[in-house]
Amino acid sequence: MRGELTVGLLGAGMIAAVHACAYRESPGVRLLAVADPVPGKAKRLADQYGAKVVPDLDELLELGVDVVDVCTPPTTHAAATIAALEAGRHVLCEKPITRTLDEARRVVAAARTAPGLLSIGQVARYAPDHRLAYDLAVSGEIGEVRLLSHSTTTSLPGWSEAGWLADPVASGGPLLDQAVHSFDYARRVIGSPAVRVHCMAADSGAGPATYTLTTVRYENGAIAHVECSWAHPASRGFKLRAEVVGTQGRLSWDYDHLTGGVLHPHEGDVEWWDVLGDREFTEELRAFFDAVRAGGPPPVPAEEGLASLRTALAALESARTGRTIDLTSWEAS
Image 1 (tube, rainbow, N blue to C red):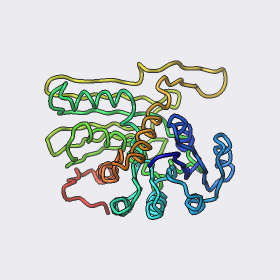
Image 2 (cartoon, rainbow, N blue to C red):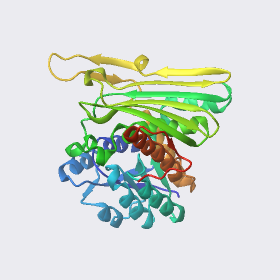
Image 3 (cartoon, rainbow, N blue to C red):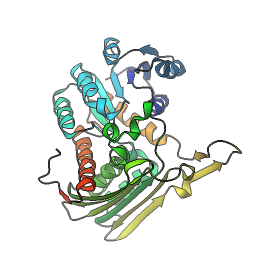
Image 4 (cartoon, rainbow, N blue to C red):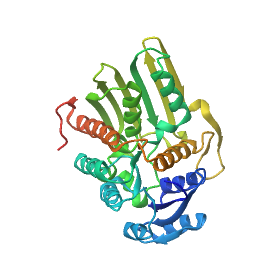
């Protein structure tokens, strides 16, 4: 596909705003319209980029956009993604691919027969540190990867419309919203499917199962250890620690060393300055648009989004029951 690509943005929340900003770094891409159930939110975002405001996905499709960018809660992903694919559009869908496995399988089936591309928004793949560690690991620089440790800890996100993130039924909690990045990255670096999952979780003031420790065994024998929390103080900010251990060496990094600065005002919240900014989103969107122009393949195929979702849902089931989940035979209820 040559010429200008037009985008219809479904959703006008925090992630949608980040995506809209990232479009500007992809030449030949124009945000045509924004749809959101809250008209004021859609207008505020659309006005920044000279885009139209429309009420829903149907109106986006009627405008003839080339790409639909789905930035809505996961309970809405399946219906929106399938409708856009069936209408012949290319789709970028935020993670997790859907809220349930049945929905994810329907999305995968739709993507296999659709003329357009579908890619899932596993943006952690594009963070500079994660990308470099992946490149070094798969090049054999540290030998065969045997262990990956990934920790992301923060407070309960406060930006979701009507607080849907705090509703475990709607969001799946931190295991689906946050740790799904860790599960996706671990599977990619280790290069083998997950086969067993065990998770311990604790409740906190942020809600049920908002501090979690998950161990994942992979088919090739490697192990991933994933810590994920919404139970930490807001003043602490978002923290990440990661380590990849191979038979010939190890890689490690954390975000404590990357803090550009912090403002402690006399009143109000602490403000953290992130030196990485939104570069990973810029790279993610650019990779997707490049794939659309080239005719594929998608950067993050739907099947890979399903695999990460399945691991996250198995972790939730393990935390609920206390059992280790055998992914070679398990089906979510």
